Image (cartoon, rainbow, N blue to C red; front, side):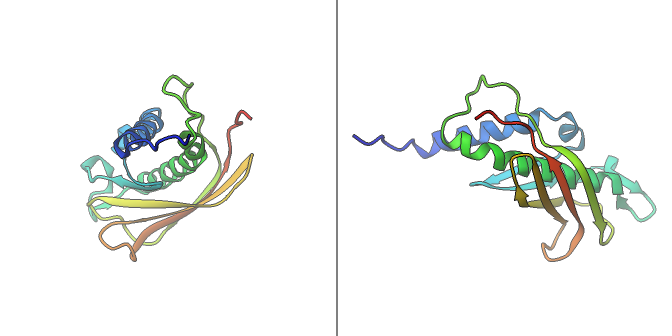
Length: 164
């Protein structure tokens, strides 16, 4: 006898709860106001505009450190999401499981392509390589037009040890 598939709402709630659990464990995400939009297994990070993000009020432009942090957070969340997706879908992760261990940054290189304007920013990360101990991720961020990036980054991360 085959098992009946879970209702779509149950699957969606489980995925959303796991994503919320992942991002709520990082206070800096809340400080910057970063939001994560999930469509299936694809994540888009959103940095809603706030005056506190401006580094140079004369331009005005988003502070370079905020841009770098936004890119790094996006990379870490994407890498973590990819890491837990399989376990979550197989029902191996429960609500009472210990806190999710995040990858540790080895190095992170940012290319500033133009000034970040005083408006919302978006970012997506692509995992280039993810092994048992090491991962490489590329991240891009834009504002009004996906093809006009204002920054891009590449990072290398030490992966947390996993059971099994």
